[in-house]
Amino acid sequence: MTTQENSAGLVVLAVDDEVAGLEEMKYLLGNNPRVERVLTAFDAAEALRLLRSDDPGLSRPEPEESIVDAVFADVSMPGLSGMELARVLTAFRNPPALVFITGHEENALEAFEVGALDYIMKPADSGRVDRALRTVEKTKQQRAEAGRVVESAPAEDDEVIPVELGGTTKLIPRSEVRWVEAQGDYARLHTQDGSHLVRIPLAQLEERWSEAGFLRIHRSYLVSLPLVTELRMSSSGYSVVLGGGPQKELPVSRRHTRELKDRLVRAPRQGWGSQ
Image (cartoon, rainbow, N blue to C red; front, side, top):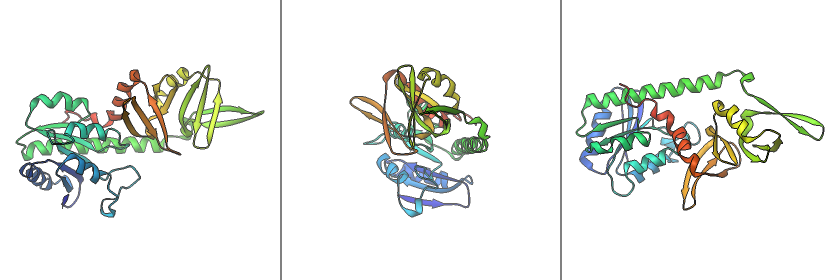
């Protein structure tokens, strides 16, 4: 792994298994005024190690956040390909924007499907790279503005659910709910402190809380998407891991997998094709 720094701007990771291609991309990125720092990796595995690095020089501003704003990756690499790298990045809570570099036009559709922000054909030039970086900047700004809106939302926007506990009514803010479990005509709200049974069908909560970031992942589970830290795949199918408290893994049914993936990668796809 190597780095190159300019005065101010984006932190970008270039990934290519060919030395010439990697040096060219490092040069194009490093000489662009929008880029503050260029990191390089010779394959996807090294890129992932870097993105998850505990090196103090590459520390994250917050847990599970990468300091990298964008990854410029070759599609065709031995071992873990660029497309496979993209699918791993979708499991990050705050994934970096992804730009593919390739010599094959037939990869464009698949690149879009895995959430790529842009797609550059080889040989790349400074103008085309600058257009991609402008898109990355725009997307970064949109995410920051969205974060400020969430942080400044008034407290009354956080719905409160009354829960009866032995003659006492306890008020549970929706923001404290990590996931909801269906139990017949009831729903069990799971928070960091425990669980609470309410007489509300899961389908009703799914409809009411959709705009608040909750998504149905299984006939029995509704989860808070901002708390999803991992998307795992095994022989039995997909599952998600939730943070915001003790780690919890929940199954994802096949019928809900596509929407879950789409919601997890929707933010980095918003700027696709913009100039």
